[in-house]
Image: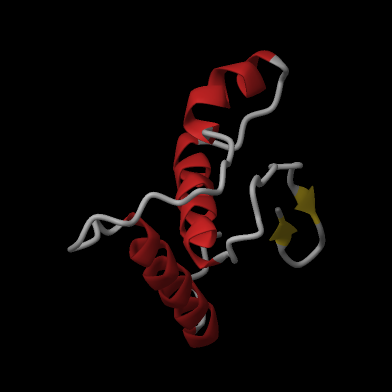
Length: 95
């Protein structure tokens, strides 16, 4: 039987959707080019799928945008970021 989500679950889903929509929005001003190099996960998605790893297109896009946003906040000393994977736990996944 499908049970409708509780008010607390709905609040969690709305909060998650709001956070994701902040990543997907087009910025009003173009972002400064960051000197930090990071992997283009969208281009590497085919390699991951060939290896038997798939995050799904939506999750991969959100992850790419989150990494891109992270590079804008890093200090100048940081030169390169590396994606190491995803760890599933009982509560939340960690990237």
